[in-house]
Length: 194
Image 1 (cartoon, one colour):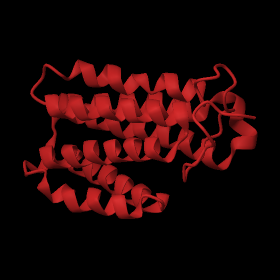
Image 2 (cartoon, helix red, strand yellow):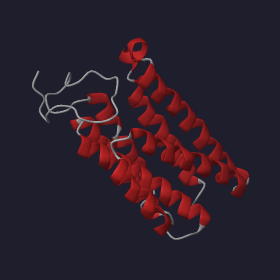
Image 3 (tube, helix red, strand yellow):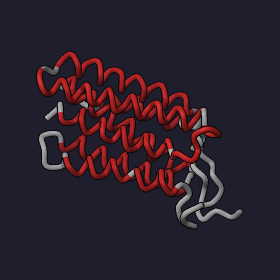
């Protein structure tokens, strides 16, 4: 079969059937649900955390292009945007400069072929955000952090099922649910930062 964007060359693969609903979109449902990040990001553009909203929009664009093409350059855009958003959130929580994240993202360029580097850094930043979010929030804002943790955890289960139980869950589009739940989780977490 000939693919519109060329052969898949990403270092991570997803369960959804390829080029089924459109000859121009490799993974239809994963591509469409990437728009959830853009919608949530737009919501925060006119707030005190506008830069985080902008970073989230970039995540949506990266995920959209990745799932539309399944090419390594799109995977890099997706993963870099996720790292930028994560590092920006940590900087916001710590009230520090963003410059500490430059070596992390620079190292990503050297190691982008090894998904494990991205996975470890992304996971560690999410745990850090959740832990510190619980420590610095009170009242209603604390519930937003609990929402972030809950939705992100549900999304992570969906991601794991997509990666490791594809033969059992393929028809359920679990990675698309990762997009939906994590965008809800990020939105909830961002509400705690306003």
